[in-house]
Each structure stands twice: as structure tokens, then as C-alpha cells.
Amino acid sequence: MYFVIMIICFVLLWVLRKRNKIPWWVKAALAFVGGSCLANTGVGIWLAGRFTDIANALVTPGSVLVGGVALIVAVVVIYDIAADKKADTAAKLGLILLPVLFLAAVGPLAGAGVGLTDAIADVGANSLGKLIGG
Image 1: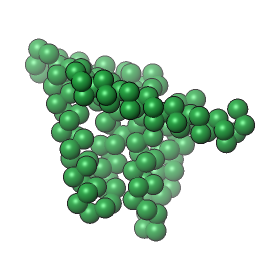
Image 2: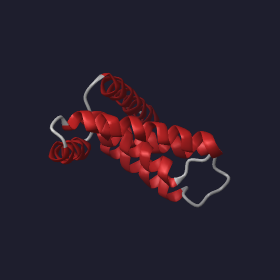
Image 3: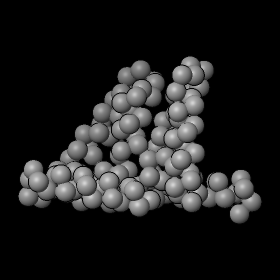
Image 4: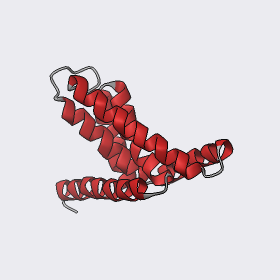
């Protein structure tokens, strides 16, 4: 179910990419729900493992490095959206990758991020289930 929601969110983002009348928060929400559903699929778990492998090649506790990168990405996304009230390409990419980075990281930020990611993905799955009558 998460894979289907991820595909729907990413297709909607692709369709809405050139539309100027769409509010910024719609695109940001689609990116974050799509990224949360990506993190709950096998592809997201595999991608999180690759991020951890790359970080382990650079430093010994690689998951701590991934947690630091997740924190930096979160700050950049918040600043980017707050500065101009638009979900630019960098903000959308950050919102898509942030749940996967939370999955690969360790520490309190990762625990809170994974909880938030699971909640958002479950909201997307439950909403789609209600729409199709399941």
C-alpha cells in the first residue's frame, strides 16, 4: 500500500511541477507523504542501508554522520520554505529524502523522525483506504 501511495504522490508532484496557482504547502505535503511512504517500502530500507554504508566508509560511527546530515537537511528545508514561502526543488528533494535519512540515523532525532515518518505514512495509507472503500 505504501508503494502505491508513494507513486501517486510522486506522479502528482510531477504533474503539478509547472503550476503556479497551487499553494506551496500542497507540494510540500505531497513530497513529505511520498518520502514517508518511500521510507516504509523495501526500496527506502535499501536506500537507508546504502546511506549508512557510505557513511561507514567515511567515519567509524556512520549512523551518527547520517543523523547530522538529516539535521542539516531539516534545517535547510525549513529555512528554504520559510524564506520565500515556496516549496522549491531543493525543499521538495529534502522532504523526500528526510524520512530515509531518519531511517538510517541513530539517536533521539532519528527516533522522533521515524515516529513522525510512520505516522505520516499511516495517514496516507488510511486516507487512500477510506477513498477506495477499503
